[in-house]
Amino acid sequence: MRPNVYTRRIALAKLAIIGTGLIGTSLALALKKANLKDVELVGTDSDGSARRGAEKSKAFHKIENRLLPAVHDAEIVVLATPVMAMQELMEDRKSTRLNSSHALISYAVFCLKKKNI
Image (cartoon, rainbow, N blue to C red; front, side, top):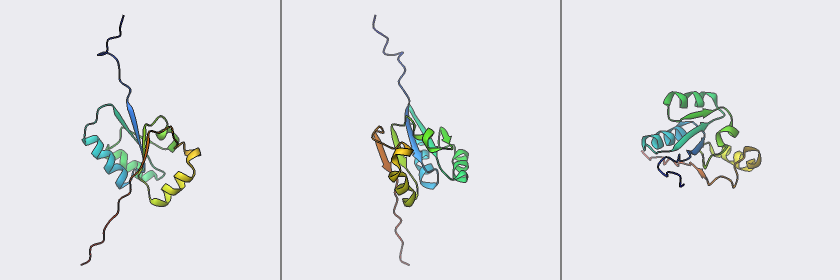
C-alpha cells in the first residue's frame, strides 16, 4: 500500500538569524511579510536588549538566548552582526557549530553611503 502523498507532513525549514538588531530584525520582518510557508525564523543575539526588541517586534517565531540552540538543525544561518563580531564567530566556527552541515551561511552586510551636503 502506498502512503498518501497528500497527508505526508513536510518538515519545517529552520532559518537562524544571528543578530536581532536593526538588520537582523528587518530581514526577519521582510521574510515574515513574504508569508513563506514551512519556514521557521529563529533569532539570537548576545545583547539582551536586542533580543527583547526582537520579541516585541514579533519578527521571529522564536528567540533563543544562546547561539547553539538557535543554529542547531538550521538549514540556513544568516550573520547580521557587527563586522568584528562576524570575524569572531567565523574564527570560532567549531564551538559555535557554524560548519559545512549548514546549507548556507550568509552575511548580512549593508554599506551606508554618506551624502555630501
